[in-house]
Image 1 (spheres, rainbow, N blue to C red):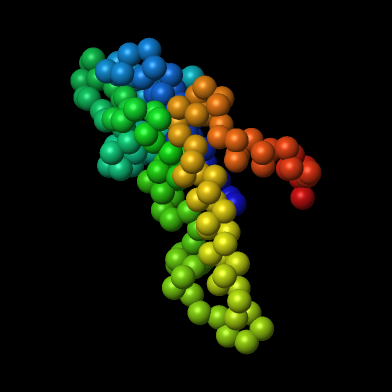
Image 2 (image 1 turned 90 degrees about the vertical axis):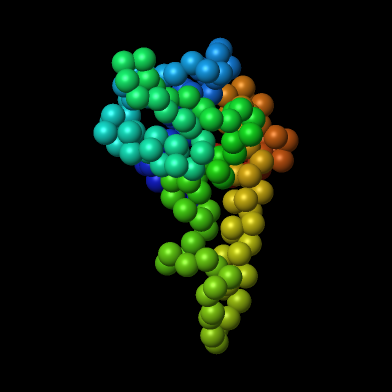
Length: 155
């Protein structure tokens, strides 16, 4: 899986907003503060936050007292929600959904592989919330993957 800069920066921004939400759910955080805290380019971050606002994950307020905050409790926002909001479907093949592809001959079963990859990604990303990441309490099915042989090795 390729994690785009947009998804990475979006998650980092949302972790800042989740920390703020924990302290005070209605507190607004300036985009500049998020960008500085996470070392993210402000202009790029503003576009990301706009997409997250359109997806109903964050809300914003303009003006001198304005800023951003989560529009939902961090426990109700999954990493899959964020990736879909910023990058589209979790697993696409050449921009198409795997179930829409057709393969012939020697590659006839390749579609099943791509669908299995998507199911595997869903299994992880749909079961981890912003709150899980913020508190470091990942679900057991995820922490078990971290202890699999080779999980931490480059390939």
